[in-house]
Image (cartoon, rainbow, N blue to C red; front, side, top):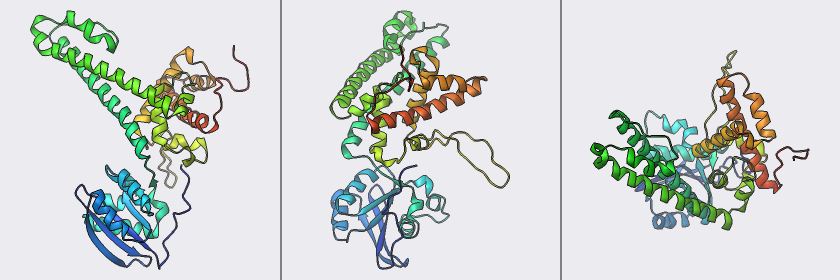
Length: 356
């Protein structure tokens, strides 16, 4: 759980709070005083020039809007104008999502009211900087190409199998080269263009890998420190770094595991307290990468460490126990990566004892 901001206090009666429902073209704005009286409502075009003109004319105050595709640049704009821009998690504001009478104007009024009465309940979202957002786009573009390449390979294998053939197993990097001679003449016109596309996608992924290495070397040396852990590569380290942004958001490294949804959910009521799966909150891609790293750590003796020993012990007892152990290792891995980041310490596989 991230630190709570000292600025998140109820609005005094003489102060004002602005609720803003952001739309793709137009945004609804509602200004409310501390007593709950609506002072002003407006419809502003969702463009930087229009929003800057509107909010420049207001005294610095609290502005509440939901997280969405345009909230990062809007939050940066409002902060630059001196406003306390609160971006809220829409999944935590059920009053809006599940309203029976929902429209943009009502949503703006409700956001202003919530910002006035219960700011701590809004689960404030802090967007990354503009540069970090640009750098994260490299990782997301790479992930998209990797997914598309996998789908193309599965399609080629499926079509060949449906026609009575079977392609040999191989690495994805060599798939196009080894698959081409095994495809029958009747399928070449359909599948050879896909093999060419898969080769181009592999080259594109290699190019993204070079960009990632350059970003770590030039701007994010802390991601290099995280790679001291066997099983953590540059993609996981940089994605982890960019997703968190400011490590000071967490007062303790232990809070990072829950932030990425790697702790069990809970629905206790009365005498019932059922066992549930993990919350899966936070960045799904980072959580997926952490779990992949954890699977490597648990499965490969090369990753021998205190973390692996803990995971192997928890994995005893069958498939379900192993699944829980992998999630547990992923959670501890997130904590360890954050700790190495903020402390600058050298990673020790077995703290407290020498390793040959």
